[in-house]
Amino acid sequence: MSEYAVACHNVSKAFGSVKALRDVSITAKAGEVTAIIGDNGAGKSTLIKIVAGVEQADSGHIDLFGQQVDFTNPEEARQAGIETVYQTLGLIEDLTIWQNLFLNREIVTGFGPIQLMNKRVMRQRSHEMLTALDVHIPSVRARVRGLSGGQRQAVAISRAAGWSSRVVIMDEPTAALGVRESAKVEELIERLKDKGLAVIVISHNFDQVVRLADRVWVMRQGRVIAELSQEELDAAQMVALITGAAKGDKLNESGDLDD
Image (tube, rainbow, N blue to C red):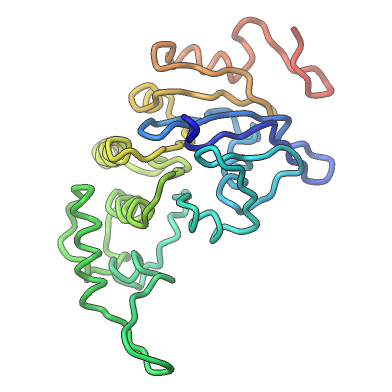
């Protein structure tokens, strides 16, 4: 088995005349937090959408634990063990926590055309999913509408981690949260790492990246321009790489890196 949970090899993607990704190669290991950073339009979101099966690459390929995969939709990626938590979270406010955790994965009992949802089992398993990540929520019967931003994020992360996931992707996991709630979410991310999952995080919070990431990939205008190990992480240096101030590198009009 490959040492990498996810390996993107020379992935390219264009939307009409816009080249969103240009021969992007990145890797992410199990039991580590891998961060992808870059300015708006750098290609970060397009890349994770390809990994998650939302978009398909024009060229290049992706390996999952050493096996090449070619997802045509998000459900195929989920079945392979890739879960994604987007900024919108994908929670339905008027449903309870347990209903959100089991949305489209309901447990049913019965035979033939007569089948009923096993609510008791789903509520019990929901409690176990939240407890496994030390998420403190009064009741799985509570509706999402009444939860705080941090609690909603915790529910979304618990859902992602609770379905035999091997890879969890998070897009700006603490973007709209306060300091205390952000700290709680960061604790959840650390627990996913400790459970041996590969965690891929997109974040504009470079101080957070320094705290959490084992490895960082820096993107600019659709390309990977730097790979940083944990020992090399520095918020000021990351800003310089993203803006092009580091080492004097620049992108010319054709979008290629000048030496």
